[in-house]
Length: 391
Image (cartoon, rainbow, N blue to C red; front, side, top):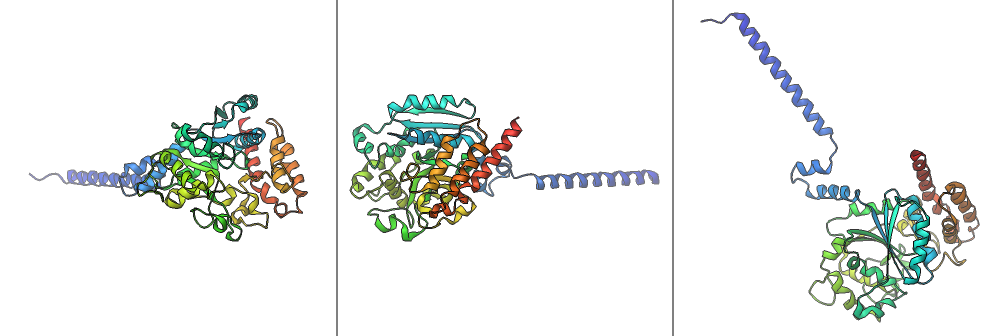
């Protein structure tokens, strides 16, 4: 039986409409997927084309969740210096901070009194620990280089529940948020366990390449005053060394290294770190000198090219915060020391500092004093903007 022509026409129209609807829907779905950001979960769902990239994205996502951990070791007369460092960390940082303060017993009450007086526990929390070394060699570790300095070597073994940590010396000042150096953790490749800056940028004035009697990292060595650590990886790693063909864990390698090199090391724990990473260079992430800016970078003329973007972390080693040898460094320290939370940050911190720095132009470091406030000004602007948004 022949079907009426109108039924064939209706059937063709219906089939054509369905085909057009399918094409439109499929095209729309494809465009949405192409424009969607490459989040960590999306990378994992797509399978294994780029395992390294997906690991990096997941790791960065994990790092954004918890507080940032900062450790410092304070002995002797370093209370005020340490408090000023902690103040600079709290002042500009965005995410909450957890401080791990290792200090001699007589300093514990003073630290607690000062930190409790700051009055905003949502910004930071802290724990104060006694100074402690492995009992069988405690006296030898305690007197290495400076009192208590070698405590930093044992942080991965003491803070067993801390995954990542930023260690800094007491004479550090943050001129931008701690968040920014903390973000380097997400840039570590699969072999890197720690990050530090070079000891020198200019080999002609470098100490390690001219005087060291032990192995050291790279061309000019590394400075351990600012040390970012993935401590989980440190605890797991087996380190190559020049004492045995057997690779050793962190807790196994420290004392043998000290016994082998103690007559050849000058800078104590920093020298031991240089020896370790000289044999394990793949384990170190090196960040630029403006993240650990010291008098050596300007005392004979500017030799930290990256600091043209501003100094990010100031390191006043050799006591320059407390004498007149480098007045530009001292000016920054005193400005932050004298600043109180609640003061107007521009009129009580930035403007007085700029005036003091102008008085230091008779020194090499003072001639480039605008580098000392270039990033600090940006940090203060960002801080002021955040305060306005809170209100």
